[in-house]
Length: 605
Image (cartoon, rainbow, N blue to C red; front, side, top):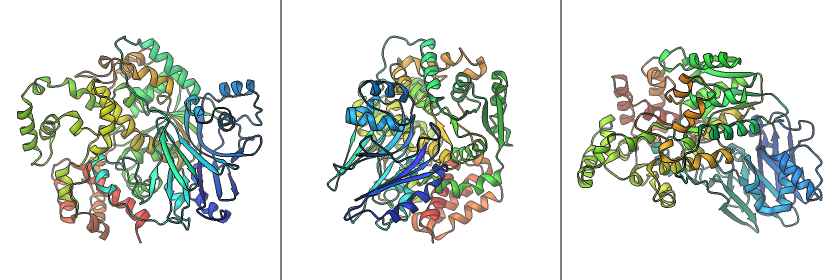
């Protein structure tokens, strides 16, 4: 795990002095060393976290004839098998690293290398003779990569946007069009970012830059194609066990993150790391540490417990938003920040349970098609009328149901945590024309899933938007903030092949989620752990917002000039007061607060 950054100069030769500040901005991603290549228009840099072949894996790495130069962030878990295959084809390896597989694989197969890779990756490869840059990102988007074509023709690329800030060709400008999308989703969805001109290389895509032209294309599209034949718990356990073993490959210790849920519990039970790490809060309602500790004891693992106090949680928010690059209103990111900081005291690599919900049907919204099915039998015009009427009043549990079931799935669903609706955005934003709905991002995904069951269709949306935009991004940024490599065994192409073929009935019903996965987990976990209800990394922000000094912290931020520039301050304070007096709008408050704290980090005076 590492950080990469670089640029291709728009004209003339690259200035080597411009690469150093780019790498300095992301030095936290690779505290074990830095390397650079500067020649002609190209400048490629690397910050290294030494995991595999610590002595021989420095980057940039060169091909045998030194024509190809690569910087790589990630891990290729089948690199040993690929090394054997490529050696048989006549290639000679100089290191024991997975990085070198990318060089020889590119020489042998070109773009066809990508589907052969089992792992997480974002890399940039420079062909010195052809003068071409090739970048690629893994199929799920586990590792991030950003790029920007500057006004002078320079192309910037990096693992984090902040690497661009000190380059003289980069003009830092706020992209206001992203704000309404963020308020709907709680993260920044799609290709664009909050920095004008900066784009994400999307999951499963590659980028080519040649003769001043940027071309991007998708190299893989994971698809849910549920079959009729049941898949046994033993088969699910076997494929997960194989993935966990692959994800344990390292020349350093591999630890685990352990909550009280089935996802991290199953990964931990299969991996049996020497130690695990758990977060807790003093508030019993939000504390998952008791079942986590009980599971650790039953597995014979050493469990490190980190209690987060309210004060340190709130104090860390600016650092969290800075490391995220774009605002994120997922309060669990702050908890993950502390969890990784605790792990960094002892280890460089941890296993975590991200991806299980998207692959195996874990979100409670996936139960929706099975609940109150009688309502769906009402005439469409009646459901539509009730939904329209409900949209005219403030949201609430019953109101949300009427709005949700008043329109088709395609017209309403864009993720498991839909946040501010159009009514709320019109009320809160200072200037909103109603053109910030994220539904345009889902159109192509609905088209490719036509005819599938509702749960599989929602999974396809979440795999492409929510997983990459929130879950994996915070996992990467919060771990790399402390020089920790976070690995996600659920997000493996072999595991996905099994999960994608699960029949609809194996995912969710009216009472439970992740049905097939829980059956597999019951083979290795205690029954209570396998059946435990999903809590989703709960954080006590709801309660803290009603306490001092945290109420005053939010009120102060809502009173600053930036709040008035983007929002209606009176509406913000009204929303906060409503929460103080028994309402439940903490997520909306946290969304606005997180944005304003982020804005101050990057665009404040």
